[in-house]
Amino acid sequence: MGKIELTTPVREKALPVLLDAIERQKLLLLQSTGRTQERIRQLTTSLQVDPDLLLAGEIPHPETHDMDLIELEGELDLLRHLREQLESLEHLKLCS
Image (cartoon, rainbow, N blue to C red; front, side, top):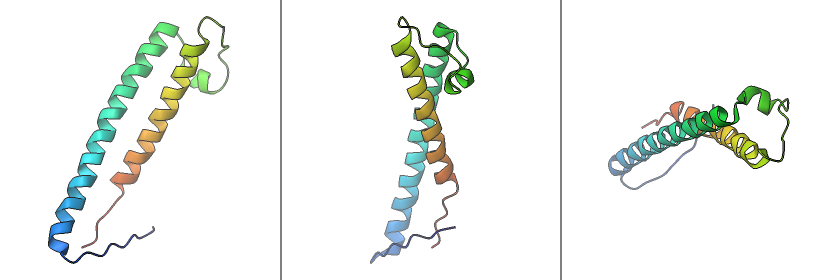
């Protein structure tokens, strides 16, 4: 596990600010994850596709739905990225 070191002249003031910033970032990531999951649900329902099959390249991209399928792929990638960021923050530990 890697360490990041911060220096501050007033540790007692910096620690609550850092803890608050981490919690706010977690909340933003959770909200973004929820909105992204909802958009994925909408797209998969309207397109009637399985996201796993889409990501595996097993869903053809007809011209009529090409842009929607590309959007869905982007939303799935975004969801993966948001989850990775959230997981990273969940394992973050401030050593005071």
